[in-house]
Figure 1 (cartoon, rainbow, N blue to C red):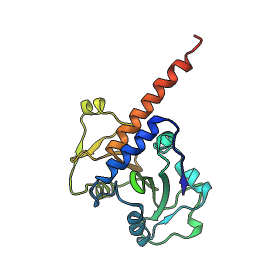
Figure 2: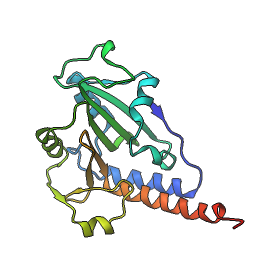
Figure 3: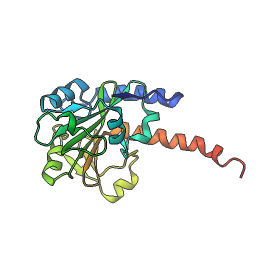
Figure 4: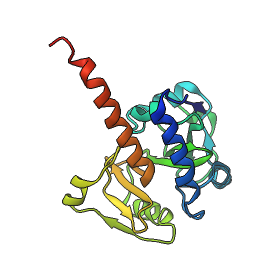
Length: 211
């Protein structure tokens, strides 16, 4: 488990307040917006574990799309990485290798104020169509999914880019290669994009000064 400090400045403070209001309004049955205690209770009952080794955590985080936005997360945020075997049995310590992932799933969850805001499911051997459909159904939250058109993708404000949005507009999803699926709270996705753009705009005059 690792925690990440709040970014100094007004933007981070505004974002922190925004997240509190937006996440509290999410439906309880949805995975995104669900409290950490509920997620871990269900996962641990199914044989899942939380990674405790920092070397393994560091290895597993490499290439994750949420990494570039750590500076914009409020101080109440933390990231937890979990592992679940494909057959649901509890993994042995020898299966938890920092150099390679054992047969099963890594689950990355970014919690804000104790609730899930970003989730990445990574499969060791690639996600099958049936597994993908099941994950989408789990995150449907009583709604259904819509695939974005090219025009909608071009116009959308998004930190991560997304291919599908839940019909209630609250959750976005995208495939990451053939072995991972990402779900993100829509309002968090927008705010991270806006904070990143604002940050780049502030840095631009400094970076080109002297030309």
